[in-house]
Image 1 (cartoon, rainbow, N blue to C red):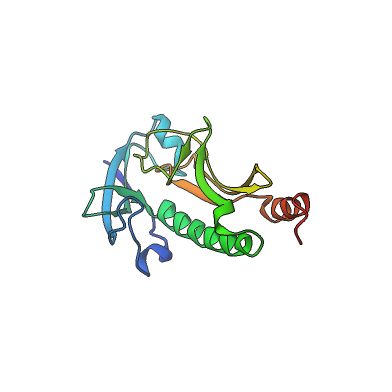
Image 2 (cartoon, helix red, strand yellow):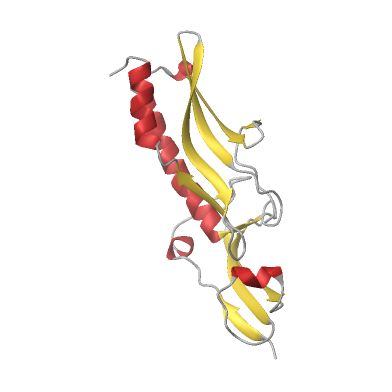
Length: 180
């Protein structure tokens, strides 16, 4: 007998309109499932005390245009990071003109990316840092805004969070550049 384990869908995923990170098309919620064997490495990611194998059911966002699927928590944390980016840009534009500002995702290997990469759940464990680069007196100063990394649980969603030292780093940056 195979037991069932249903993973709830966050309310933020059900309410509101969500756009695909890759192509911008409207996303749909789609049901997914898989069998997890009790003694597998994968089973350690679940808090399940039942006997035998179990079937896991959950919902993900699916883009009918480009065919990409994305965990709900990845999509909602990405949307939150867009709000943080908008707030950061608004704060920086008060002190610098737009030609002095550039921004990019930087992976743990130092590669610069225009956007957060879309990849399958099992691929890559890189950490990605969303960074503003401020050009001032012919020097570039980096300012880290968000950090994106895989969570070591269940379907391994990508979690994007504001940098822990965001406020302090912004204050220090403005002090270093003697801007108040």
